[in-house]
Length: 244
Image (cartoon, rainbow, N blue to C red):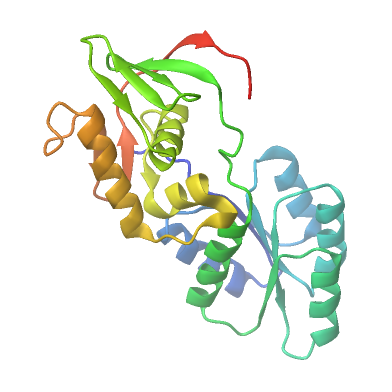
């Protein structure tokens, strides 16, 4: 399966030997990556792509990173992680005061940046925070997100926990798309995420027991061995309800 809704990260750094290897590393971690060598390129990327997070070098020729960070915060843009030089303590303080979400001092280990990125995504409100109140049908089931109930056309009735309800809604929003465990944590828990990848596996197992004919051989909620899950069925809306 090739479709994905992994976060889209913009790396802005005038140093090609930092920008490109960092982009390659984060792509291997499953993120979609866009690169920019300066603030002007970054602004064009932000105008044309849905960026979820910006990794931003402070010291750049032309418009510097602090100026771009200030503009991003003023526009209500995506979260920002600043890359600063060892001696630029003042820049780090100014960046955080103006609204940057985190900073990392050069030189740094890419694994540390990866950990910071994941931490920021956990603090940021999840993309699925606005819960739809529309009933939807899939594979004979009708899902009511308000009552957290599933009704099958053969008469089966299932009640979902709050966590299962939220997890199912993410899959219904993105049918036929592989979603990684870490992304599922971001989308379902957001700022309150205290869980770990295994918790998602456990929720998937419980959800399968409720919607699959044979949970041991799932046909709807399938595993992608690249590290995620996908709901492989078409979705049809039914009745729109009043929003809560």
